[in-house]
Picture 1 (cartoon, rainbow, N blue to C red):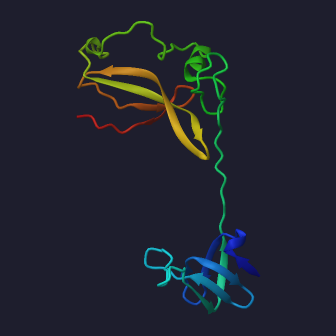
Picture 2: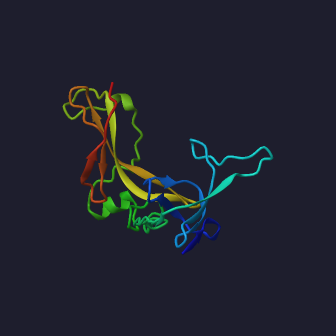
Picture 3: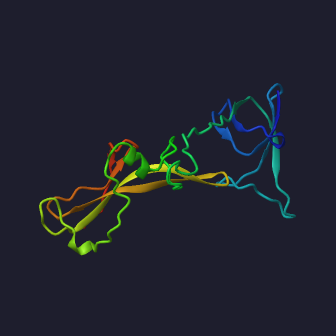
Length: 187
């Protein structure tokens, strides 16, 4: 079988005598054992000669081609906008945002507040003045930028704690159940 990199063949070539991978292979005939590869330095960069041309070599031996496996990442994307309020932050695999999903379940919606209160008068559940403000976050549909996906989250709840009762922030699922307590760098 004849394999050429210029035809889009991607994979790894292993020398069967040494067990080592051969970097930057440009041509391989598995039937005859003929190989052509680019000369590389220790970091895998292709070397050039005095004139600036790329250097390559030819060899004969026993080689095995291992085809590269392309995995498709399956993400259960949500809708572009919330079906009720047109928010761009929809839950994964859902057409609603965290606020509208909470309303549908009859939960208090912590994201919408009509009263702006200063942070310095918040209290811990024990009644002491809060030293820490911690948010609960839910993962929402990633943002697509060309071929890149960027994960996003939305704050769906805020808790206030004194130094004695502090708890770290949490990552919630779309039902509001705790998936993970996040690490915290509390002073």
